[in-house]
Amino acid sequence: MKNLIIRLLANAIALGVATWLVSGITLEGATTGRRVLTLLIVAAIFGVVNAIVKPVVKLLSLPLLILTLGLLTFVINAVMLWLTSWITGKLDVQFHVDGFWSALFGALIISVVGMLINVVLPEKAEVH
Image (cartoon, rainbow, N blue to C red; front, side, top):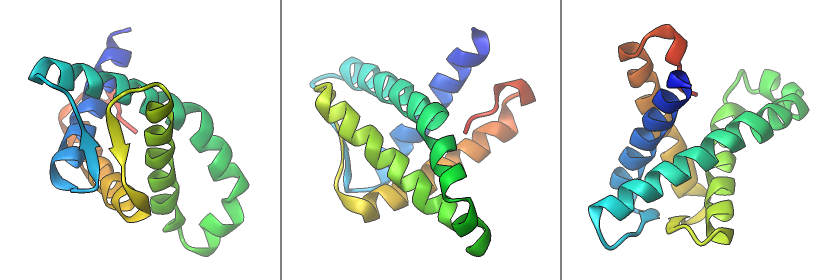
């Protein structure tokens, strides 16, 4: 349970940094508390998408992943972020990604922040 909470917080931090740095990713809320709650909800949805959908997409795109030497992973991560934005829109959560390029830059930032957090956290609490 502790590992799940740490991963949720780490994903929320990474998403928050992406929201702050990429102009095409927006997070709305009247108060700071509301924004933090929205980030936690988005992080939970992002975690579920990455746990369920991402492995299937990677398996189906395995030949292209090999052909591109893994660079397709960045595109897959962008699509997962975009899918998260779509799901949050259906759930009326105030998080939105405007277009593929915003999703790609956001996914890159989330990956980098996730790697930095993994350096600080113990190995059992890896963030993906």
